[in-house]
Length: 224
Length: 224
Image (cartoon, rainbow over all chains, first blue to last red; front, side, top):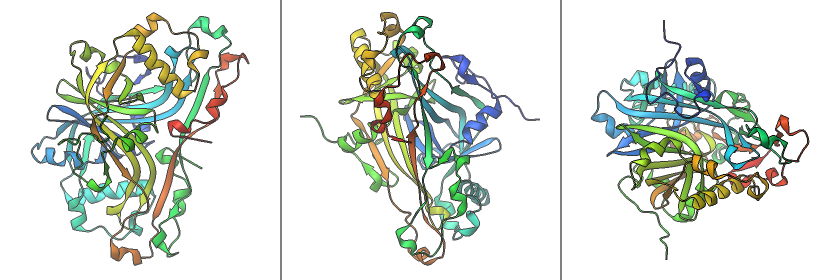
């Protein structure tokens, strides 16, 4: 049976505000599955490099487009150390004192080694998953992917194994004495919204936007 | 006179899709000023650590809340190497082939050394800037910050000096032959939206939400 808990290590265990931490696979996956943009950190010449990129999850793995790492990976068969972070902002938390100002968020941090998808069929399957997540069933409607294109695409993956999730929800937490003050406090809710699809100007009415694009809530995108 | 261009170095110069790169201070600042959440990368025990956090800009510096780095910084007077990245997603770019699927975005990547704000008055001024950016003029209406709170807050900064911006806008770029195909292509626009402020349940009508919260467009947040 597969572990239901992520590995707690020195680096994955939350030091600050440990009450906000979660280490169960379910919470981790819920956060990963509610987005499509991650930030991946690499170490290059001893210094950090953080690159934003599209990601998707399948089972116990996260996949992403990772051209940045491709040169590093050609020399490291066992993979290169990465930290993959996803953060969804849900609100600005405005307290009665500056010290308690905060942000409502759901974040996920994964540690491990990035590896390249080398097998061409495996890469094709991974990209199919990526496209169909953006627009359900779209892969089969597109011009078929070529071998040359597959070779030119770098897909990386890492295990969902070591990491943590962090969640803050709800109202500000003020100092008890401050609640009596006549100062407004509350939350400004924040959402990512998908607007109506805009046709490519060169489409010339040759096709209509797929109906599935009206609901992208599985990507964490509310409709307009 | 201050430089109008960011330093182009081996790591800051774009290798992939260099046409999307910008190195002018103006573009960098416009991207930084259109958000409030960044991802900061550190190197801890030789491995990368990427942490999402609130940031703000003042002149040629970026500031952020950085408790993660505080232990590292107590032993490094000259600062620790960081990569600070900001990414705004503007749309899902759906092409006629999977290979040309993309994302419209504006991203900024800064390299340099993080330092702690040590001086207590300087820290106070930085936090005032942070709060007033969230809600204009709010600082003076809050319960005053204490010396103890200031000491307990870690504010980091780095220079806006070495880095690059990357921008993709507009329709999909398909292979010329593919434009004739009867396949839909276009962009699903994406925005971050701020909804109406929600009162803290413990407010009990003691105050009203400040009017300035109705327009948070300077944080990259469209109104509902």
